[in-house]
Length: 289
Image (cartoon, rainbow, N blue to C red; front, top):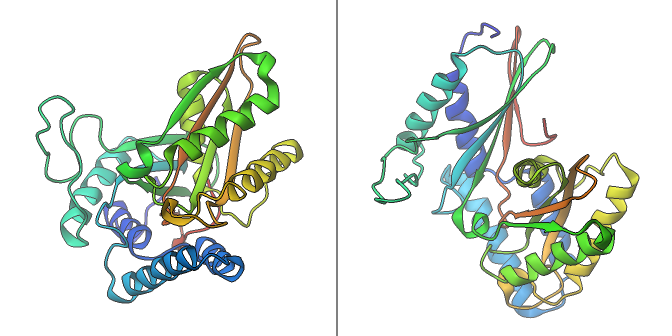
C-alpha cells in the first residue's frame, strides 16, 4: 500500500462523509434538468423538495437521508491485507462521528451490531492492478432501493427485447418504494452472482458518461426513454421523470444462459472515490473504478 500522511482509516471516514452529505454533481445536474422539463405540478414539487433537501444536507454537513445504507466498497490498484481492517475501523468511526445510522443486524436474531460492522461486513470488492495508486470507492445503499433488486435467468432466445422487458418491469413493479427518480443499474451476462454484482457496480458510472459499448449505450437510452414514458414519476406520484439514468455492465456468459439483474438507486445516488498516491489523496464523486 502507498504510504501517506493521513491514514486509510481517516480517508474512509472522509469518503463516507462526502458520499452521505453531498450529492454528486452529475446527479444534481440531472435533477435540475428534470425539473426544467417536468410539467406535472406534483412531480415538480417533489423534485423541488429533493433538491432543497440535498442543499440543506450539504450546508449542514448532515446525511441526505435517515437511511444511510450499507456502504459497499470498491478497491482498485495496489494494496495489502491491512486494508480491510483500516476500512472497518473507518466505518465504525464514521458511524459515530458523522453520524451514520447503525444498520447492520444479524439476519436471524435481528440483533444490531451497533457500528455497521458484523459478520460479512463491510462489503469490499477488490481489483488489484499495477497502477501506482490505491483507489477506494464507496456506494452506500439504503434498504428501500436495495430491496427492489431483481435477478432473472432468461432464456437466451428472449434476446435484447427480453432484457429490456425484464428491466422495465422490474423498475415499474418497484413503483415508488425506491424513492425515484434514481439511477437503474443493470447487469447482463456472467453467472447469477456476477450479474447481480455488475448491476450494483454500474451505479458508480456518472449519468453524463456514456457507455463505451455502442450496443449497450443504445440499450441504456431505450430503457431510459421507456421508463420516463411510463408516467410513474418522482416518488411514484406521476410525472415524466421516473429515472435519471440507466447504467449497464456486461460479461460473457454460458451459451445456455442469459442472466439479467436490476439494482436501483434512490434519488440520492450516493458515491465517492478517493485516489491515494505518493503525493496525497484526491477525493471526487465522478468516474467509476
